[in-house]
Length: 334
Ligand code: KG4
Ligand code: ZN
Image 1: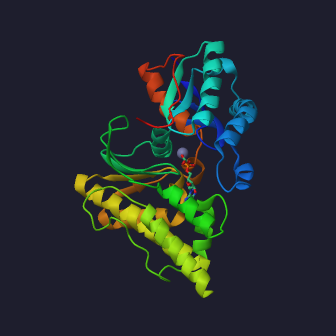
Image 2: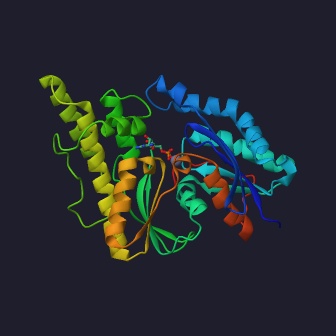
Image 3: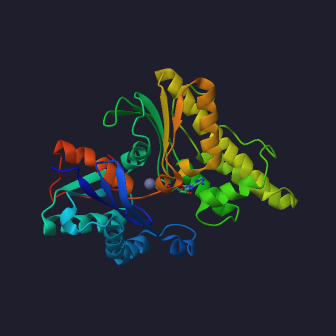
C-alpha cells in the first residue's frame, strides 16, 4: 500500500485548494487560491461567481500542488474531495474534477465532510491529542460542539440555533462598514479598541445546555451601532472589541462547561473563526486554569484548505473505505 499519498481537493466556498499529504500527517504541499478580491466587490461570497472561479482555478492550483510536492500523477494513491457541506455549485466543481481525475488515472475516490476536515487540522499538527476530547467547530456556516471519543467517533452535543459565529462576525463587520472578510477586519478593529463601551448580551451563558444563538447578539450590536451613529459619538473599534469579547466569552465558557461535564483532558477548536486571536487566547487561558490542554490549528490550517481534507481521508484510505463515482455533493449535512 505504501505510505499513502493522498491528493486533497477543496472547493466548498470561496477558496480553491489542493494539497498532497503523505500518511495522514506529512504535508508535502498545500496550495490555496483565495477569491477574496472578487467577492469583496459584492460585500460577501456570491455562489455563482465562486463556482466559475473554481472552474478557472482548479487545474493551475492542482498543478502547483504537484510541483511543490515534487510528485507526479502516478505517485498519488487516492483522491480526496470535500463533497459536503457547502455551496452546492462550488462543491460540484471540486467533486466533478476529483471524479474525473480518479477515473482517468484509476485511483480510488474518497468523499470528505468539510467540518470533519476542519477538526482534523488539529491532528495534522498535534498527532498525540489525548481522547476523549471536546471540540468547538466555528466557521462561516457552522457553530457546533462535539464530544469526541476518538477521531471517528464523535457526538454532536450542541449547535447554533440561528447564525453561525463567523456569519455574525461577517454581518456585524459589514454593517459597521469594516468591509470583507468580516472576521479578520473586525479583529483588527477590536485590537485598536477596548471592550466595555456598552454591554452586549452573553446569549445562553445562563442556560445549562450546550447550544448557541448569535442572531440576538448581532442585532444588539447593530442597534448599538445605530445609536452611536445618531448620537455622533462612540468608537467603532470599542464596539468591535465588545462584540469580539462577547463572542469569545460565549464560545469559550460553553466549551469549558462541556469539557467539565464530560471531564475531558483535551479541548479543541477548529474552523475559520478559530483563527481569531482573542478566542485563541481565552481558550488557552481557561484551559490552563481548569487543568486541560487546549489545541487549535496554526493559522494556515484554520481557514479553508485541502491539507485537512487529504489528511483525514488517509484514515479512510488505510481502512479501505472508498466511494464510487456516483458520489454526490450535499449542501447540508442531513
Ligand atoms: O472555515 P472557513 O474558512 O470557511 C467556512 O467553512 O465557513 O471560515 C470562514 C469564517 C468567516 O466567517 C470569517 O469571517 C471567519 O471564518 N474568520 C474569522 C477570522 N478569520 C476568519 N473570524 C474572526 N476572527 C478571525 N481572525
Ligand atoms: Zn471551512
